Image (cartoon, rainbow, N blue to C red; front, side):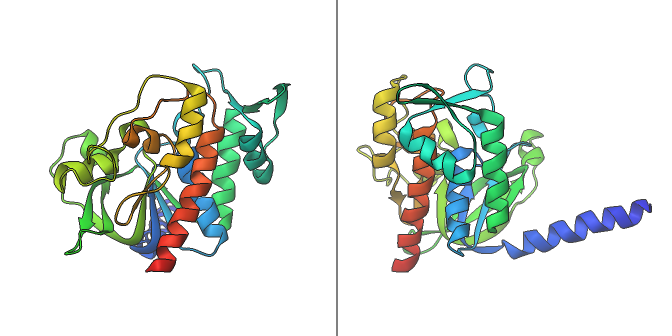
Length: 259
C-alpha cells in the first residue's frame, strides 16, 4: 500500500464532498439526535442537506444516555420514530420504552447518510451570513481545532436557503444572531431566553410548539428550541428530540417552498 495514494484518496474525496456543500438547500448545525433526524427527513425528500458538527463524534447528549448509562427512554410517539429507523426498543412499563442510546444514534446517523445527507464533524459555525433583508443566507465555518486553539485564522462560508440550529442547550446560532444582529428573535425578549430547570413532561410537550422559524431563514430544533423559548429541559427522555427533528424538517420544507 502506498501512503501517498492513501493520503490523496482521503483529501480528494473529502474535498469533493466539501465543495458540494458550499451551496445547499438546508444547513443543519449540530449532529445530535434532532439535527440528524432533521437531515434524514430532508434527504429522504431529495432536499440537499448538510450537517456541521463541531465535535469529533456525533450524537450529542444521546450517546451518553442518562448519567453515562447508555440507555434512553421514549414515549409511544418517540418509539414510533425509532421504529421507522429500525432501532429496537423494549417496553419498560405502559407508555415507557427503553432503547440502547448507541444503537439509536449510530443507526440514525447511518440512515441519514444513506438517504443522501452530508455530515461533517470537527467543523464549527462561528458566524452567519445575512443580506439586506436580514435573512440568514449562509454559515461561516472554521475547523473546530482553530477555535479550540484560539488561532486567528479566517473562516470559509457555505450558502444555504434555510439554516437549522440544533446545537442543543447553548443555542449557539441563535445566540450569534441575537448578539450580532440584535434582539430580533421571535421570542418574548427577542433574545435567547434560556432553558428552565428539568420538568420532563412539560419540556416534552413544549418542544414541538417551540420547533419553528425563530428568525428569517433560521429554524430551531431539539433542546435549542426549548432553550431559545425558555422551556424546561427533559433529561434522558428523547422522544421529543426525535419528533422535533422531524418537525424541523417539515418547517424547513415549507420555507423552501415559500422561496
